[in-house]
Image (cartoon, rainbow, N blue to C red; front, side, top):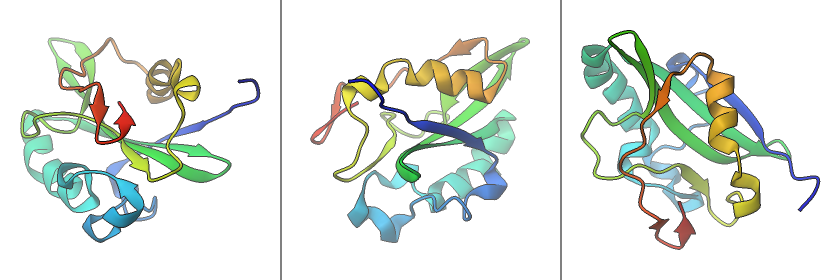
Amino acid sequence: MQGITLDVTVHDIDDLDSLGWPGVADAHAWDMHAFQCREFIAIWNETIGVSRRAEPKLVVVRRGGQPAMFLPLCVETHVGTRVLRFMDGGVADFNAPILARGAAPRAEEMVGLIARVARTIGRVDAIDFPHMPVNIEANAN
């Protein structure tokens, strides 16, 4: 499909509230799980993120100016290698984006999206997304 454009922006943890990052009370409008919500991300950053020296990279993917997807990512440096990961540090059993219910990006929009995210973030030497199921509820992951 021609003409499909998704806008990708990357933000710091200080932008969590201003981004409209979904919280527990917003679950009715988003396909998400508790470990992706604003409350979890804030606590994770202050505890596990600090101990892992993770750099939060909150990714917002918009279509037509409206959020279609949120990706709670971080960059961790190990032996000089910058690794892009989901913000979980081993506390979640799978990783996935938060998807706008009924307006999630389509498969053809997803082609190359992670490469665009990595370029927008900046220097990343590796991407490590080990816990990515094929489907989460009704959505392809």
